[in-house]
Amino acid sequence: MPPDMRIDLEGLVSGPSQVWGALRLVPLLRAEPVENLRLHSVAYGDAQRSRVQLTNTVSYYSYIPHGFVADWNRDAGDRQESAAYGTQVLAKDGAVQSMPVHFHRRMTQKQGKRRVRFLPLHLALEGYLALHFGGPTIAWREWSDRVIRHGLSPRTEAAYRGAVVPGLQDALRVFEIHEGQCGVLLYTGDTLAAAFVAPHPDDYRELHPTLLLDMYGELVYQYALMMPAVQEFTVHLDADRIDSLAGMRTAAAEQSRMWTRFHDTVMANALLEHEYTAERAYQMGDFDLTRFRPTFKPGEENHIGEAITDGAGRIAYLKTFRLSEAQIRRGYLLELLATHDWRLARAAASIGATSEDLRGRIRAAGFEMMLREKEK
Image (cartoon, rainbow, N blue to C red; front, side, top):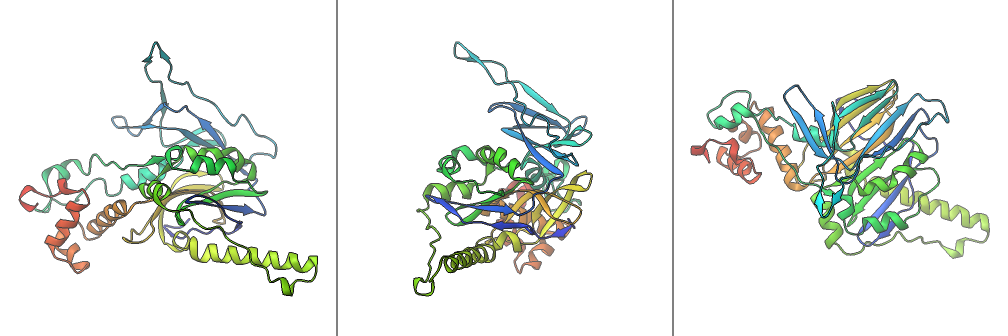
């Protein structure tokens, strides 16, 4: 994937959607699965904690509901144990025992000659949280001593676990998994919430329940909770023009194509047409594990995510996280300031604003600690 890229779902066809209240799930079908890359689940337990060693002195702590293990260039049928369950937290007489720690060296960890373990969406969110984490590169007078010395630490963002998204558990339980399905696009209130693609239909069937363990943005939760039920895609056939079974098949196939065109050009357009900046995190033979971020356009859909692509750029694995408007504004401001070397006046002039206007935006975005006291 090049540094500037678009998400290309070539080889994947959107199937008929299924709705449950405010949720719409659109299956993604492959005619030919990616045979030489397989994706498995590793369950750590609901309350298990993980530690990822970043440097000798810095560690990353996170509660991890599940992880993925990728196998590549394996012979057909050569599939090892796909799930290894971690130790659960036990309670005796109402007292919770000490929490087990699962130790990892990095966000991606090699677990064999052709196996790598990574934490779904943690790679993408780490990239977002690390965005210009070091803060100003030059001690301009507007910035506080704290942000110059320590950068934007700590950076935190909120997310919802899929199990608490209203209706998602029921939707995943009752919705049909199609033959050849390798992915799904999840909509709440008919706005795209998340995308998930696996390399093989068997992988998707195994990982389908893990959508309840994934992280989702605030907008996803709110829309699922508050938006009214969405309408199903209704098939309309012209009975006057159908006089045979073959004619009915032709009309039904045309309706299916109409839905696919409508979905890909309208409903998923914001994800597929947006430009992203990609960064390779791990090379796995002919495959690359990358994370990507948008150009941060306030008022529009913005997704961060991670993908595994083959040598031809075809997506074998994809997982996305839709940012809230507040998260988009924070990303936009950091990119704006970094682009203009953290010079407040120059950055403000580039968007047709005054320095005081930009200071107001910085405060509203939750970055007040970046400014000197006398500048606030």
